[in-house]
Length: 433
Ligand code: S3P
Image (cartoon, rainbow, N blue to C red; front, side, top):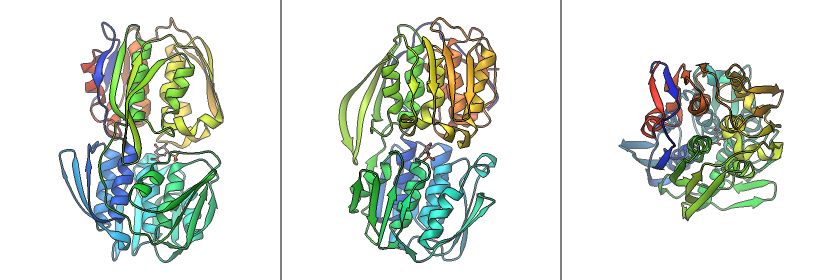
């Protein structure tokens, strides 16, 4: 896709919409469905590049999967899942495919080589290699990064304390633990998203949840899944902030996952003065779901603490954009993990500065000086191939006089296929640059 210019709509943003199915839950439904006995049916498959990489991976590992539109039928191979010889998995841009994938194959047969694009090859992988080696797998990294070579085998459970709060590392260890002898326990410094725990419980796996983490006994049979994926709150956050930045706007995002470990950004926006409600709460496969109703409201700056970071980790870029239009200062700390996401997101957010926003990057965070009356200067944004940077600046563009050029809008497809079309349908200017 060629660069796009995104600019303010003529009026307010109004209406009801849906966002693609939750990426984190989707990855897990494919990986855990592949380990289950029998056929899983996953509806609302979001079809972004990341989840397609996981779908391809589980097929290569021996699960049978067919996709028809947004329905995936997946016949799991049970706890014997894995190739007989050597297999290569292309994880593309997806850290979740690579890290959870490594945990999945660590307890299986064969040799699995996991690789990805230039961005994924820059991201730290020792964080999963170290615990998987402790369990007995042979894991080689390339100077701590991808490509990874994982030779699975007979694993033994471990008691592992995560050095960083990371649901990907926690889940990699738990997935390996499902095929390990004895108990695998993971302790986390701060609670991270708990979709793996919820889905395993839904599949009939007995696990124990503790104040500081979770433990699971290896060798249990997983039941197949039948679920419709809820909307992704990380995608909904872009639309929520769009509505908050345009006076008079009101937006309903239907059927979104509202798991407390995923909606930290909405809690922070609420503290900043946003009007956000959850309506029609229900439960799907152990996950709470509801409609998010967001109405424009003036925002004020806040301090986002290290303890709040895990529950809002993927939304920090769009929160930084919201902060640019809030009264006073917003300070994010304890967010050094943002430097090792799909791009160095703290560095990428410094692109707010030439648009007229006073921002200071910290080693582990960002300080943003907001102004509710602000109009941004126009400019060209380098996304670095990072979907959330592309979408965060596209939302910022709704308050930029001459709009902003997004150099690589196609990268939004990683998590939110159709994002720019939706923005256009809601009334924003979206045109070839
Ligand atoms: C994810 C966990 C988070 C998040 C990523 C998806 C997951 O990463 O940033 O987009 O599905 O487990 P970390 O666990 O590395 O923080």
